[in-house]
Image (tube, one colour):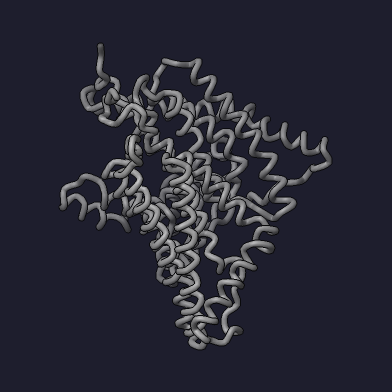
Length: 476
């Protein structure tokens, strides 16, 4: 087998392909478990069966803890099954891995329910264990099993077959493990921070700093604690605005990046300042003219999504240009890419959005008018123009003026996917009460254009997993 220029086997599917496949499995499995009939007919009876087994083992009274669908262990099971089924291994190995994983999660969940029954008389302890401790332990145990299973698949193979390819390198693997663990800690502690008076005080500081900057920019702003009033309306800086999922991802990146100890310590120490600055920066959206920003509520809620998109574009530009061309060239390319994406989003975005309107028209013709889901933050309505702009920016960053036939193909695929998703999302919301979480929508808005650009611009003869700087490609 001829090695690729990146040192990976030419047949390696690459980390990004794996991530896209994992994302598809997660969306399908988690969405399936949120359907009403699945919760009523499968998850709730399964939870009750586990509770009965736990009561038999512990001898605790059966009426102290009520097991519903959320107590079934369904979410860790979906996490386990999605990651293993997406891994590039033999299907027999995947099915065995899923079966053992689900059995292990079920047994651990029985222990969990039994433990909760034993401490149910102490309400404070029950709340602590039920809300924070046991959910974290379940996810950590699931992640440990999945990563252990993957490691075994990459290091062993049946007789006569090559070992499965390593999907992630050392740094990427460490980042994923750290991010998974820290995200678990985030969701386990989020209820505490969402109700914390101290975080509410910080929200007031952010509102005050944002109000001062808006006033300096000649925008009328009045601040009352975490509430900021402008001519565009009143906005509240909530605990959710401060304690965001970006924090565990940032910390995981700092912990696993190849940094010197002093720089790593400085980056960790700067975490509060970084996210305080981000919190203030999002309020500066209120200084942008309405003709440019459109909906202020949508723009403020999409601030983090937009920031991640900018990071992707800049990273792609620096990655493709390479260190030999110099920082100035990379910055110029990144600026051109961002400008192109903004132009595409604003100029073609309104025309592009006819896709959503067209699907809504089809629903009306079929007698399904009004089958929509609640989009309080405007995340779903933003998807068409945002993905168009992000695709354009990333294409300019990695391809420049080259390959526009492939770019047209990518835009066509993006349009078809957007149109195809609109109908089932509306129908699922109307008939089954399944409303996609706003975080899922924002993740999809970022992932789809990035995956398409990567797929279409992968270097010829190399694994579908990395973009090599133009100056580093081998010739001959």
